[in-house]
Image: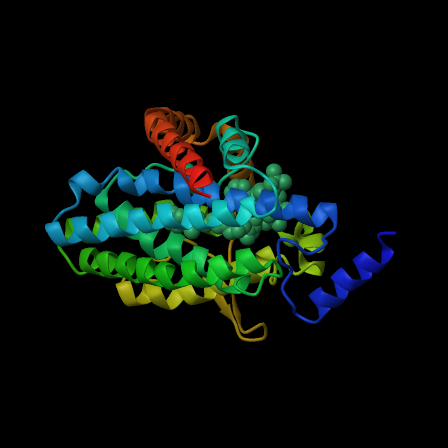
Amino acid sequence: MSQPHEERFMQKIDAEEKIEPKDWMPAAYRKNLIRQISQHAHSEVIGMQPEGNWITRAPSLRRKAVLLAKVQDEGGHGLYLYSATETLGITRDELIEALQSGTAKYASIFNYPTQTWADVAAIGWLVDGAAICNQVSLQRTSYGPYSRAMIRICKEESFHQRQGYEAMLAMARGSAEQKQMAQDALNRFYWPALMMFGPHDAESAHSAQSMTWKIKRETNDDLRQKFIDQTVPQIEFLGLDHPDPEIQWNEERRHYDHGEIDWEEFYNVIKGNGHANRQRLSHHIHAHEEGQWVRDAVNAYNKKHKAARNKAA
Ligand code: BYC
C-alpha cells in the first residue's frame, strides 16, 4: 500500500521539489526532521543565554543596542523553527518538555561560559559564522517549512557574523590588553565552534539517511572544512595567532590540513557535563515558569474571542 507513496516521495526528493506538511512522508523522515529542527530551535533559544548575559555590561550604548537586537533575533529564529517543527504534528509543549527533561539536545557550544566581552565578539564571529556555513546549505533542505525558515534566518545571521567580527577587530586593534582578550576568546571558542558541525562523517549516526532524503545537503566534515578554510584569512587579518598549531595549506587538496578535535570533550558536553549545561536548563525552566501567566492570558483571550466569534456566526 505504501509503495507508490514511497516512490512518489523519492521522485519529489530527486526532482528537488519540496515536501510540504500535508504530503505523504515516511515516518522515519518525519521523526528525523522533528529531531533536527527542534534541536535547532532549542539551540537558538538556549543560545540567547551566553550573550544575553552581557547585555547589561556591553562596553557602549552602541554595542548594547546591537547586542540586544541580535539576541532578540535569536529568539525569533527559535520561534520560526518551533513553528516549522509543529507542522510535523508535534506540539510546542512536547518540544519544550523534551528540552527541559534533557531528552532533546541543543548545540554543545552554548554550554561554554562567556567570561569576557571578547567572548561575545567571538561568538558573533565564530559561532554565527559556523551556523551560517551550515544554514546556507540547509536553505536547500527538502522540507519546505524548514527551508523557508532557513532562508530568512540566514539573512539575519550574516549581520550577526559581521557585528561579531567588527567587535573582534576593534579589540584586536585596541590596547595590548584588549588584543590579548581577543586572542584568549579566539583560543576558547575556536575548537568548540568546530564541534558545532557534529562528529566525523564516519561516526555520524544520522548523516547517511539525512543526505539521501536531502534533509542535510552537505556532510558534517565538508561543512567543517569550509568553515576552517574561511576562518584562516580572517584570523590573519585580525593579526591574531591561529589556535591550531597544525593548520597548514595543502596545495593538493586545496584545503587547510588541521589538528584533531578533542572528541572526548565534545561527547562529555553533549552528555550534559559541560561547564554550563545545568545552568542553561535551569535558567530556561525558571524563565518558562515565570512566563506561565502570559500563556494563560493569551489562552484565555483566544478562548473568549473564539466563543464570541462562534456566537456571532
Ligand atoms: N551539539 O548523527 P549526527 C545558532 C548530536 S545555533 C550537540 O551527525 P545530525 C546560534 C546529534 O544531535 C545553530 N549535539 O547528527 C544561536 C546526534 O544526537 P541525537 C544550531 C550534537 O543531526 C544563538 C548525535 O550528536 N544549528 O545559530 O545528522 C547565537 C550524532 O550526530 C552536535 C543547528 O542546529 C552539537 N554540535 O548532524 C549564535 C543546525 N553535533 O539527536 C548562533 C541544524 C551533533 O541522535 N542541525 N550532535 O540525540 C544540523 O545541521 C545537524 O543536526 C548537525 C548534527 C550538523 C548539528
